[in-house]
Image 1 (spheres, rainbow, N blue to C red):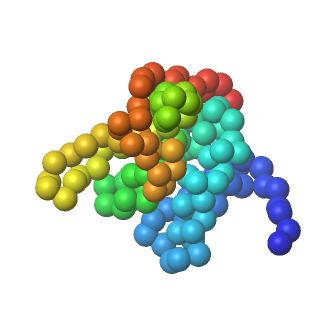
Image 2: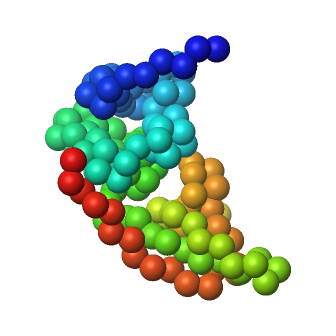
Length: 138
């Protein structure tokens, strides 16, 4: 399949058109913003898209109700970025993550550090958590 390049503003307008809840094709793009396109953006572009979306009333409303929007918000929020160091079998690794609070089956809330939409780091392997402040200049 071909790859198409679009500029930041086209991406931002497309993101606005896909704010949840939307039909499946739009929701797939929305999830890709978090799982695929986040990795292709600079820190400044991520911060700019976050600021852009937070000016949109539909986004604000969706943020109150839609878990996909809450995940996007947590991933792109410049004030919710961390570097987590893990130790697995003696091997130290650093991961760029975002923090999200989840409700457990027993009703308790737990903070987890996520690397993607459905991927979090198991707390037993975490050796340190450091706040990361990305550059916001665009």
